[in-house]
Image (cartoon, rainbow, N blue to C red; front, side, top):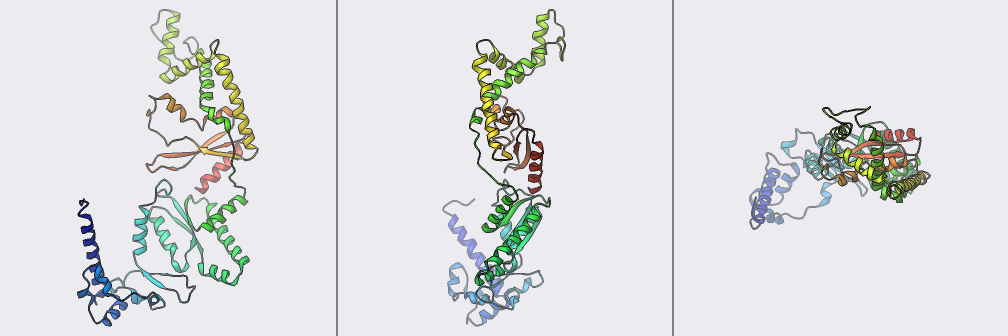
Length: 405
């Protein structure tokens, strides 16, 4: 790596080398394009002999944008590229004959470089895309389609003709403009509902807004809800859960159920060694906490109060479901962690359950579905919760979400 003081010099050398390479390519009769060869013949000097670095480019007269209008477009194509597939990218043509730009590999190179800036967390590699937007003269579809394919996906395209949109606006045909927008959005909805596993959409802000409104019209709407008592869910859950564990596991003493320790001489020793050998560290921790919470003098202080807060949490969910059909939350506050990574810190491990235990306390159906991966490739889950005895709605929403991903 270059030292800081050397970096500007090296950058200038690379730029000057690039300039010399481009000048040689375009102004050499064996490789250059017709336009620049004709242009050089009128200059009165040879660019290949006079242009040696970036600053020398000032010797050229200013480039005139109007030169790009009209054809033949092959005049812009270097001779060495005549045998390769060529694409034309044009302006919208709203001010006359469109300006043209011929492209061979540029759009591929540009968008492959652009791909490196896309976070895999939001643009998963291998995922399918929907391109909903202008293609037509600008050939934007080509670039977006290649970007999707370069990242390992399949691109579904709904084309929008920008020239027709401009014409409708100029004529004041706003009803026709609205109908055309709805037509494009309807096509996009068809693609999204067809089970193509589309996870990324490339579109314009106005089309995205129209697409969201279309989804709302079909019944999908995001509303704000309040679950004020869920902030107490973790302590409430672990007071109740450990108390129930202490009570329910009391029967596993080696007499009738499950494991029994061997080589014991007294009944008390059998009880003690059976429970010591049969239960793991986490189970023992929960039994001890639960036994403490149920003990005389602490029952009302811990278990009784926890049950009261549990009732408040259940009421929060009943109130929320009066406003919505399902509630969507993360399954966990963090991505998946490694096996046994948090066993040394039980409190941190308990806090990972904050989103799932609220449904247990409220007694409502919940399910988790995959919703993507982090940049490190760790899975992220989406939890969908529904009201009591409404599992069918929960399953339909989860199915619709997975089809739309």
